[in-house]
Length: 121
Image 1 (tube, rainbow, N blue to C red):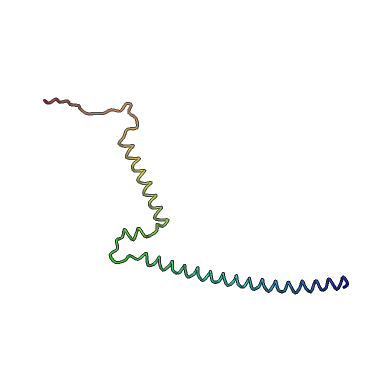
Image 2 (tube, rainbow, N blue to C red; image 1 turned 90 degrees about the horizontal axis):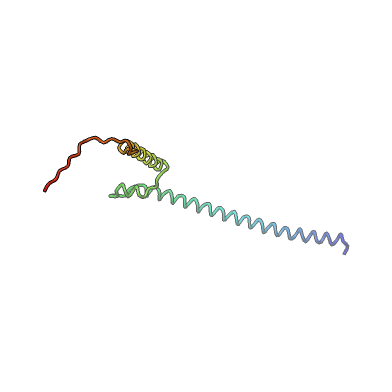
């Protein structure tokens, strides 16, 4: 066989094999697309279940106390910020109270009053 015929045969064989590979790739791509679509459906189902549980768990059951409902409910950012603000206010009030009632130095501090001593037998 001449070189030209060999290259034509090789090219034809390569073309035939690549067609099979392309077909195999398209079937793999389609399979992956189906898998992704199935996973998206499952995620949406799970989101729906989470929404239902959050709505049903937020509603208090009959005879349930407010404390138990609060224990189940997650704190929001506003709740946490409110708690921080309350803590800062408490710390400020305690600091001012300490400054007013407790002398910062003991030197030159006058105490007024009378001391009486008694002895009983």
